[in-house]
Length: 146
Image 1: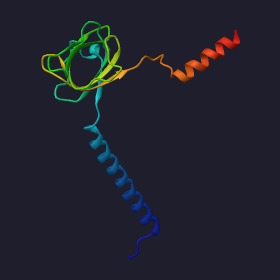
Image 2: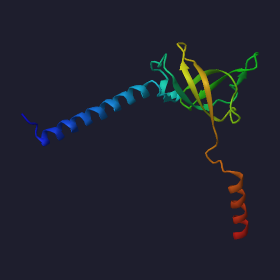
Image 3: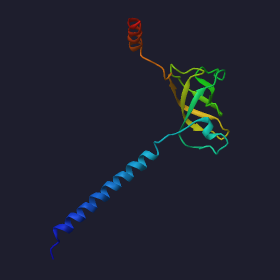
Image 4: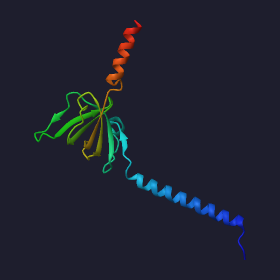
């Protein structure tokens, strides 16, 4: 008995579709462990904390909250979004732009006591930042137009 070419094409198309779905499923399962969710302090206030998961906590470093530990590499500070506050502990070298009153994204894990243990800090610069070369050109343009 001979298989019709129409059935061969259908079987080949189904096999290709199954292979694509399988590859997509494997990729999603691999990425699931790498995904870090982002939270603001107000997002977790009064709710169960995502304990044991790597997450990102973002907000502003509260003024007056930054303290340096005696070991010289550990710091503590508070992240706020205006709605809630979360105390953060970090051990390591801070980014150059990290300071009180600036934006920060801390990567790490929430602790059972409600604090956050950060493994990495990402300082956010001012959204109005402009490279000096462009700022200088804009200044010259403004003075020439006047």
